[in-house]
Length: 133
Image (cartoon, rainbow, N blue to C red):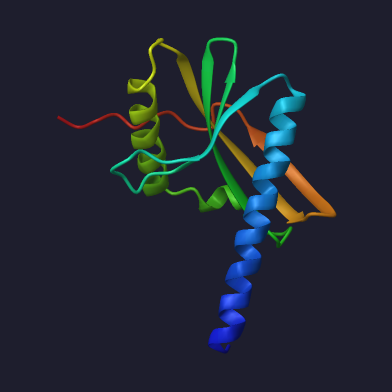
């Protein structure tokens, strides 16, 4: 595959990823959540949290995974390394808050395309890993 085709595919994937985030935001809002942040990143970290939402006194850290192939489960792309990055970012975000919130980690898996997609939303999809001593 040529470099031009690869860059075009990457651009398409990024565009679909942003559209998937929009789909998930609309879903959360329809369920009574407030979307506080999109693509939140601590100042000195590579960690990024796709969406941070709130419902009552609970903050929800949402990892959005999107795939155009409906036969592929986007959630399978969430590795233990990705979970560590999300948890690290969530810790930074929680420490920056003046209030102690409950929190959880959700995963939104979107497959298909903007005209025909499937959204699987998993609440409490994972627990933060325990730190070793």
